[in-house]
Image (cartoon, rainbow, N blue to C red; front, top):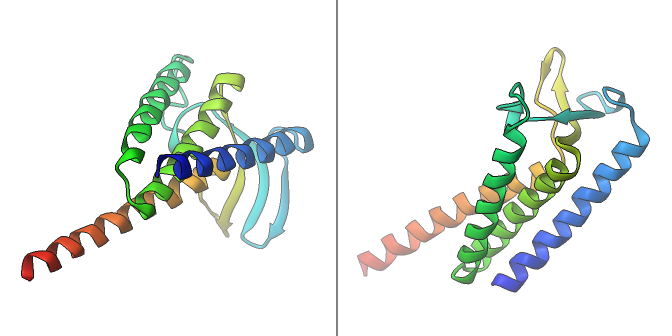
Amino acid sequence: MRRQGWTLALVILILDQLSKMWVLSAFQVGERFNLLPVFDLVRVHNFGAAFSFLASGDGSQRWFLLGVAVVAVGLIHHWLRESNALAGLSLGCILGGALGNAVDRAWHGSVTDFLLVYYQDWYFPAFNVADCAITIGAAGMILDSILEWRRERTHHRT
């Protein structure tokens, strides 16, 4: 499953970086373009982790978060060897997302976010393709864990 996971990760990495390059060339920081009554494209830069966690640091969080990404890539590479199809695809999504955001952090010092979902005065933090992939991958891992639990439970009954 390792090859398929890495292939998916590279596809996600490419899509993520292409979308971010487009946003960087098409939008100024803070500029918004409305697509739907609840969805805009916007250019923002996140200097922290998810939901801007650690964003107000002194800049050293960049290197800490890059280190976390390197460790995550190593662990996922190892886990891919023993994963089933669903877990492998899920890990590939997480890997691609982690690499996409790590590339941003290494090159720009921040992660480019551009997808903004909101309703009236409520706003979800802006995110990007890499974040979507990580979320899909995490949901897939949860589903795989539930299915594995059910398989073990069924196996123990027989």
